[in-house]
Length: 333
Image 1 (spheres, one colour):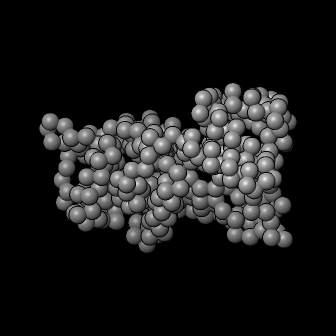
Image 2 (cartoon, helix red, strand yellow):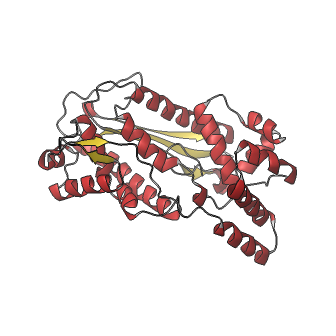
Image 3 (tube, helix red, strand yellow):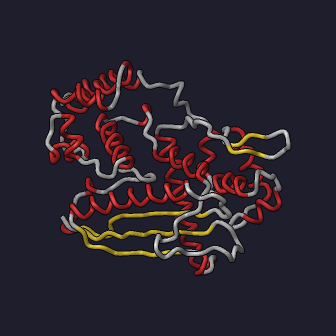
């Protein structure tokens, strides 16, 4: 069913007064962002954890999307072959329009590498989803929730703060550029738009608390690869808030960042379901290429923000909301 969609690809500079920023016309401004920052924040935003999942099909969706990101040629047919399903049926399962047949459960748990409590959790979610008895559903869900790995995915207030304010990840990336020198006044001034010294100080303290930077004997700060534990509904809320702020920065950049230091473009597109899916795959592939190029960046000298938004502005005869892609960096929902 055709509907109008807007592809809004924005690139906004996060440093003020950097006249040497340049636009790469061929690659649509490939972002030069420190890879440690990008991978750390990207993983936090996109990783589906055990405690996030309340529908067994989300395990399968997450598996497919990760395989697709790793191998662009991975297809519904390839995954369906593993499950004993044709590609069209698997697609409907991932869109939550169908349920897995019972005979596919063992194969599903095998490709997902689920065992022990996770396998039991998967089975309980499946049984709850197909049950038509509301009381039975509630009973099964209660059992499933009791299996969640509370310790591993415990909520950390400081980790949520990491996503509450856009400048905290920006400060971490900045520390990678300046060699870890903690000059609060300079940090506050160089972030774009500028932040207060109090905000810069708080950002550094939060980064220390969650283990994303550590203090060296020299007094400088070094970036670390700490494992962040935040998960569940609170993470989703924090991610949405973070994305809202980042998209707001893109809007502000239209007025506050010189044209030669940014690349902001929009497209309004009429698409059919097949084109819609293909464009989603293309966006995920573009993200993968961006990350690959960032990994090759030898001496980053700026922090850039890349934002991608793909959403409907009209649907023929009301359309179907079930076909809309979800949020998160490179993820569907």
